[in-house]
Length: 113
Length: 112
Image (cartoon, rainbow over all chains, first blue to last red):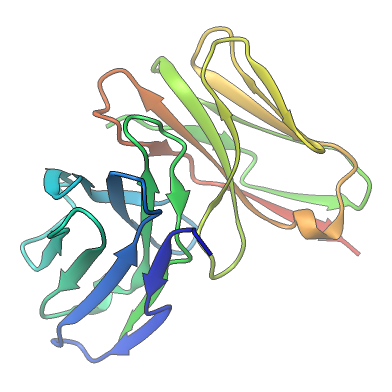
């Protein structure tokens, strides 16, 4: 399977705990995006990388959120001190260059209890 | 911020019927993308449109990039049960720094 891969698919955590999600983009894609999606809404942009450089972060991304793409391949999204409002589907997408045909992973469903 | 108005919010149709949905904006877009999302899954790209007036098909799906560049339409012909899901439009405009702007989705439900 050469699509975008996300791990884990589901995560349940207690409020206040830290969580980390991983995204493996399509191998030749140099742009990687993180989105958050809540029920009944479209995806909301969080941040994106071109290769290893994080080029933009949404104002939605609080200080508790951090993302990395250390070698320009896979990326991680960490949420520290999780809150119930962080419960959502976290989606990763990748694209090659400025081609906007972004391909999405299956998402990580986070539930904070 | 920029918004896409997607309608209808939901549709109840009979199997075999044709379906139409659209997205509009007050801004001019360079690119329109249509995605389908099943419950618990990520969005899957259906059709990409890059030119005003462009009409593109993917099987029973047809999408058009509006002449004004402010809207797009998706049609599904002869719907089948597996068409059930949420359809999202997403657009890219000149000053968006390559961030997609998303509609709120159209939920398609097929009546048994």
